[in-house]
Image (cartoon, rainbow, N blue to C red; front, side, top):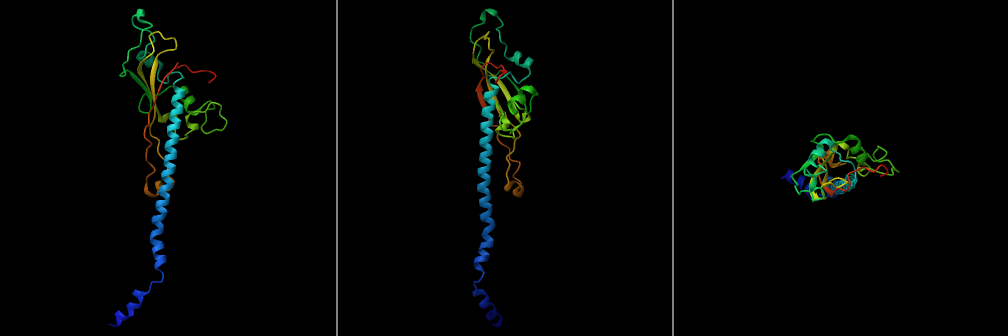
Length: 210
């Protein structure tokens, strides 16, 4: 009875309740706030990756083939087997492909570096007159790209500018950088999807002044 009377005022005392509630909810609020920031930052990185791949695909579409030239010429010969067929449409066989890059044979190092690092050979340098992929997203390096050429059915045998192909550029092994949740929850190894960008090639010949 005495003990009950002793704890009764203690149970009815509400001083400090607001502080206790604040201490309980503060970590939750901060976690939600950090999540919103991380989500926006991750979307920004995603958008940078997409824009960089689109830019790189446009460069590669008017550059020398990045795959081994012997493999390229074997897969996409310029002239028809029968010379009389020169001038006719090339076959539409999408199964004929050749790739290079991450997980495949190496690409032409000089050509890929030009597309990734731009004319100055460096990432993120201001004032580069001919920027590259990593000037848009520094996380993308030559070893992170896969380039695939595929028969499109466009063009004709004997075309002076070479075959008209479908070219696909995609990214591999690039992870999102999460400032808060990465170290806290171990979410710093989330890979950016390949997000392939497909474009029709033009002359596949690097312009010395481009």
